Length: 405
Image 1 (cartoon, rainbow, N blue to C red):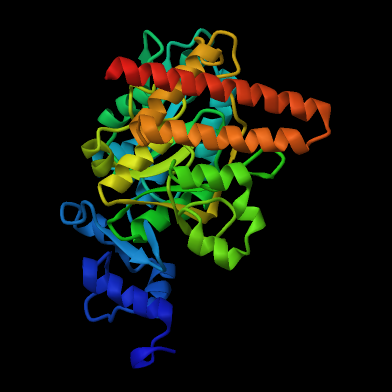
Image 2: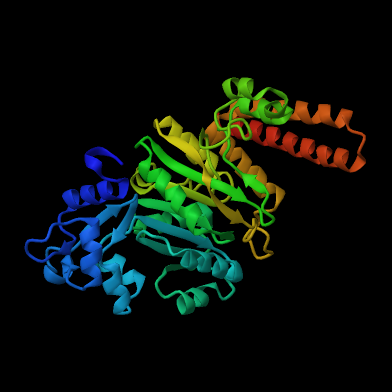
């Protein structure tokens, strides 16, 4: 029991009635209470407020037990209207889900089906941006998902530009950047959105626990690029130091240091929830990167502007990984020249030339020490390839810095 002898549901109901006015039309002289409401509903002597006063009822929504309940839902379901009709003509959605697709028809179908089957309890819209797919992706969306807003590009705009393109036509207060090779669930998305809605305004970007197909953890957020972050990752300090010491000394967002919800530097772009107004003011993802490395660069810009990025432990999705990049039709994103160019651009945009070179030398030192201590030949060969690539990165950074100077 709480104040005035009311239970929590009764208190929530009373607050909802006071805050939003009548949601139901009662007979004259009948007091409003949960018990009276249930009895009159069974006797069909109480009618929805919108049925008696339709013009006054436009947009009325009441909060009950922490959920947003739409009083128009029974009317819409009874008349067979689609979910898109409700969000189009009555109100802007809370969430805009932007899915980028490139030759992943089967994966895209699974992703959109998981969103539809989640039956989210808030208004949302889905925007699919197709980057000139050669398969049946566009036809599949038009045939099986008519409520989805489809943008069919004539050429591959790459990941960053396609997300910015979808964000420009979105209407939700929150944007969910989602890969086509992901599978979502109801509790995961709702926990993610609930955290963002309840978080202070300085928290503008959140991400869930990203799982592999076998249920193992793929990603729980990362620390921003820095020399100390590179030392932590290269020498495995998060595993070697006690947790209490690591939580104080290591960079914010270092994986495996703090359990539960925590502040991080950046989250995986396969599922990133961000406030739309901040996303627009920050200019969206960096289109000069195009593909790979957009998330840490975006996290650096957010932190520089005084905002925070958080990891939400109660939310999770499944990321199959490499849906578009593994295809042979993809432009040279797997080539060494492309990866070098992306790595150089990302380093310059996040930490600058000098720090990027120091970070690469730290990585080289760590890899060389591991190679000396390892007796396993295959792993030694793998480390040798990593060392060779890092030397190319340093060379590329040196050439770019001289050209810039």
